[in-house]
Amino acid sequence: MLTPDFGFPSTHNLSVPAAEAVKRLKIVVRDAYRQADVRPVDQVASIKRRFTFTVRRFDEQTEDRKVVSYCRKWAPARADSTIEVFRKMRKKLAPLQGQQRETWLQVMRIGDVAIVGVPAEYFTVLGLDIKQRSPFERTYVAELSNDWIGYLPDREAHALGGYQTWMGLHSDAEVGTGERVADEIVEMLKALKK
Image 1 (cartoon, one colour):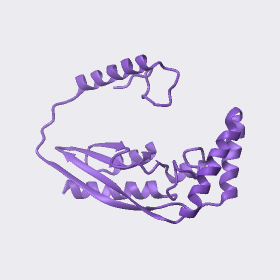
Image 2 (cartoon, rainbow, N blue to C red):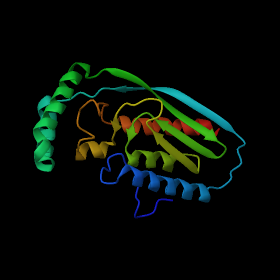
Image 3 (cartoon, helix red, strand yellow):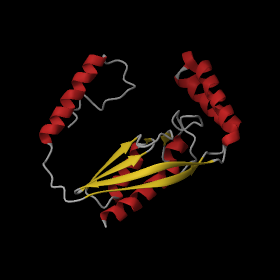
Image 4 (spheres, helix red, strand yellow):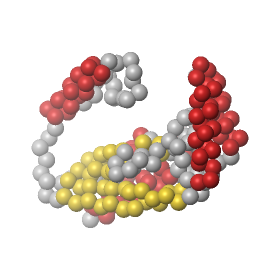
């Protein structure tokens, strides 16, 4: 169980020295291990399916305004270099707009526990949606599984903006892909439950 003073480990936390981060992670793993229940495993099964998504179409001026506005306000010291990085990324992506791409989704059953494999940095709200709709009481979502297709925000996050939603090599799937992944995963979980 994570304690309030430790929070969740992050690769972006540069203020905690590596030795301290390792120590904290070991404590959390040990605590979780002590609290774990022994569970019977009467079934093991897995479903892995191809999933097709589309590189989103974008308007260069609109995307540029988003990045410039954010960077000038929140990171003025690095604004120019960050803005240029995103301009270069969009230039690479411009000819790929509308392109169909393929990846994998996976669900596994180990007894009464379901593990979901999502090939992205998946927004928490989407993982929670899967858990709420799962036919398994214990459902765990593992991101960055089998592939990496970038950040997958939900529609609301796209509307709110921020660097994870900007068009770039880190986030190029069309809006709504995150929800489509959740819907497909839930159908896979239902099939696995049968």
